[in-house]
Length: 127
Image (cartoon, rainbow, N blue to C red; front, side, top):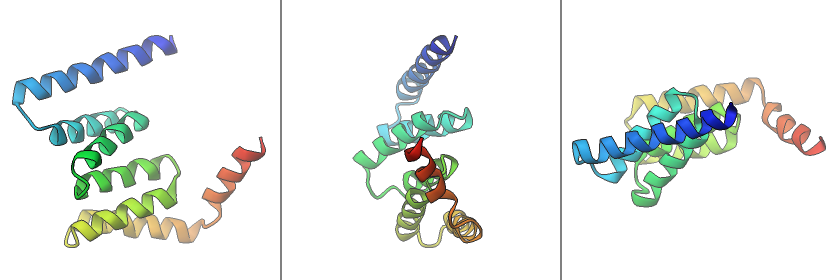
């Protein structure tokens, strides 16, 4: 059943890409951003990361893609990666209060639990 769900998700994502691309005549950056958001809303973080990384291949100066990657990495517990993405997003859009808020919240989280990420990575290696 897990395989069917995976197949269904891929078909769904493909259909969304096709519909958004042809129906609205949008550029690939906007399409990948939108599909990434859809994937994140459906808790498909790897799919979301894939699309936001595609945005950065096309448009490395996309503050939205960097911020969204920060959110995805944070959800996955990859706080250092999230921090880098939020910082890059804020460099690109220094007046964006949403990005600033994401960065601030992550830094507070990292201060209150500084060993969490390294413990998770270490415990994964020891298993």
